[in-house]
Image (cartoon, rainbow, N blue to C red; front, side):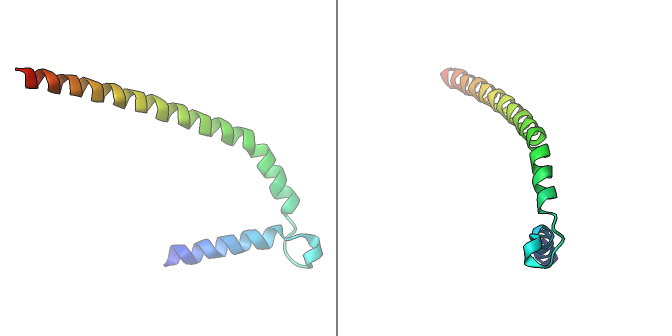
Length: 79
């Protein structure tokens, strides 16, 4: 319950902070938020790409291990 309330408060603060000056209230951080998003996009893309490579390598290892276990199971059944 506390997590839901905190989540709602953080979202409300986010909306309040990026409201434009024409609204008459708010923190007017909209341009700063856009600049931040522009700056962090390449770093975020590199991080996501690195994580995707790690997940792909782990998936390949898992498939190879499953194939080996399958082959061992077939050998045990033949005996």
